[in-house]
Length: 566
Image (cartoon, rainbow, N blue to C red; front, side, top):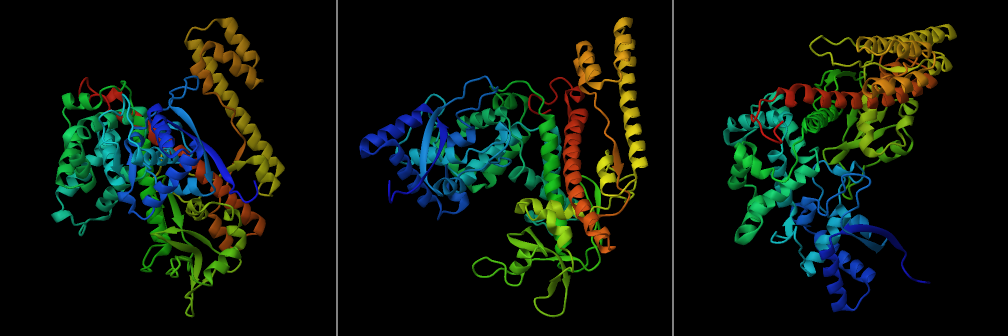
């Protein structure tokens, strides 16, 4: 219709009781469902935006993740779908003022996916028309964000894995020895420990349906009855009473722990806990990389060991990052925006501001200038979102040929491997070297097949079956298909070894400084970024495996830790 505002359509799923409350509001106002939702959501956003982020309201269902997500693809989804037809921008504003628990993201595995828009809708309805059902009955419906986050902290330590417990307990002992909570006098390792715990609790927590069940158990204990509002204040104020409750939950006796975990299934969450600790350590490492790049004191060494994952970074001489003061409207002052548009610098978030890299110090204003000819090295990063730029910068500085001390050596290769055919295309190896790499890869693949045959032979598999497998060694797909009929677990691990070539040189930044060609620099920059991302995935997967190997149930005496403390 001419003159009407364009509406954006989306949907959320809410409990039936919330839908009935919305219907009651519609009956009072006489407006349609779409118009009522738009009005409620717009009023909610207007109330929440001026408030301090910790004082904004959330509905208890968000902390409990209710309605629950289905556990399988074939299971029906809980809740009732509610269509939203909103003015452009309103949904984004609503999400921005909603609750985001640590470790939740807009797009993620279902256990880690935030429900920001659902939270906004539920809170908006509850503010004008209370509702309840069998799950929500008796619970304090609205919490301030800070109280909600601390409720989640209690659920996290109640269902806490041993990798997390050891970290949290070490930080607890350190804080007990600190005078009046002062961080002065802490050494690097002690400060890193506290920073890692802060990252674990505030940013990278792991999620599972079991943790939300535990959150519901804790809410039932503290957010029902005549003490509900007082306990919400206790969670919000985060004073001595909360500290005592936090410690009691972390060190709960087995009987108390069973009550906290009531309704959860016996399961070993060590892998999720181990990777959460790894992500927290990685986040702290990136903060150190930021400070090392900016180097405000001018005393940072040229090299830095970034662990995890354990690679060595080398900053070219005279290269630095700058974090200039922003203008009154929060923008970078000139000429930095112009340099960004020209592709002569990159920018990344730094301490509630922005930093630019790489720059060289000069005596005249503004005190820095771009590195001459740097555009080719930075070009692959132009399309990256702001949150990924620091990882690209880090990849450019990895010393691929650095020999680490045995004590620092990670448990996996930190090397820049590239397909042999690609290496030949860009002139890094000859055709003969490529053929040799392919022959070696083929030999390793066949060796893996022979090892499977030998294993089947040790297991007493019939001779005719083994002879058939030997006959199809030249057809990997057929070999794997037949091997799966014998042992799916063994066959699933079979892989074709790719023909790779290992880059023998230095970092992409070092090759640029040495005068390498534009083509080589751009290939090396893109390859380093891609390979570093894969190494990080491998490192996190290794943390998952190590958590099971070190802390899994095989290492637990009967009744020693109880469910959840695995």
